[in-house]
Length: 125
Image 1 (cartoon, helix red, strand yellow):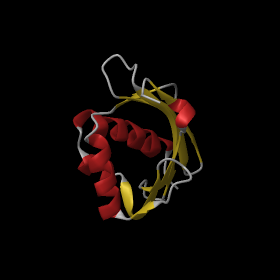
Image 2 (cartoon, helix red, strand yellow; image 1 turned 30 degrees about the vertical axis):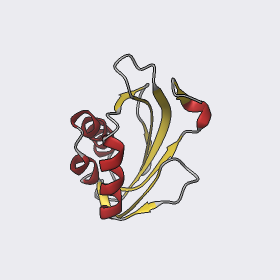
Image 3 (cartoon, one colour; image 1 turned 90 degrees about the vertical axis):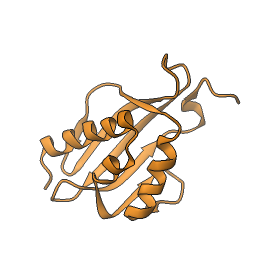
Image 4 (tube, helix red, strand yellow; image 1 turned 30 degrees about the horizontal axis):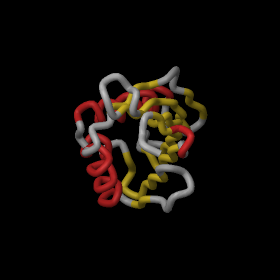
């Protein structure tokens, strides 16, 4: 089972990947057979190549992630709330809760992002 320290470090490394706009840092957190569902309800993105493409596109938006509260972890899961900010003041943002499921080596097997239209702020409607 992944340790709490591994899971918390992975979340911080995920935030750092966005700060650096480095999709390779994000992809390195994932197991080879991982899935990303962002947002929940959309078709899952499967495997390293597709996940790399996803993060390359997302990071081109310039989004910076700001944690909102503590990281919660239990068993092989970590949940964390954050704002994806698209301007320095954070007026244009999406409020998100991500849940990571980890394998026993501390790699992310599954990422699910919970957000919807009501969590988008400062965007044109």
